[in-house]
Amino acid sequence: MNNKFSITDINRVILVGKDEYKEKVISFSKNSNFKNELIYHLSGKSIVVFNGKQLETTEDTIRFLPAGEINEYTVDRIERGECIDIVFDTNMPITDEAFVLKLKQSEKIKSLFKKIFAVWVAKEDGYYFECVSLIYKIFAEL
Image (cartoon, rainbow, N blue to C red):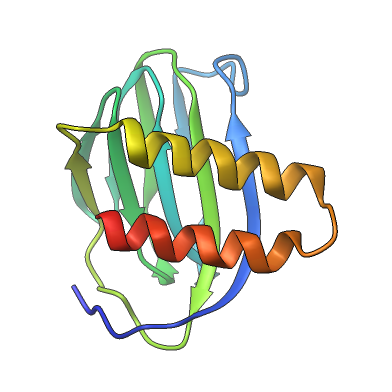
């Protein structure tokens, strides 16, 4: 994983709720301009296939999906859950591989994800700069 990248834009920070998608298997369309995604799984369990790579997500896992072209992106939900998803751009690729990290001590990172979501939604003066600071803190912890 490249550790010399810079965040050039945060496109959105969203909370995906337990009832967001009714279908058990969700298939996202092909996309030639896919942004980086860093997703903290607060609860639930799923099997994700991203460009041929299978990833298992459970509570207290982080999923990273790299920017670039996607040909295949499906989520097979085993157990309903919630996650916080940060969509962002960088000046250079972080990695070209999707991956999942299982966190052993998750409280600090979980609180950073909850804070970035709260700051993003509140949109108070200076929120964008605080969100950029928080995503760097998340990467520093990882």
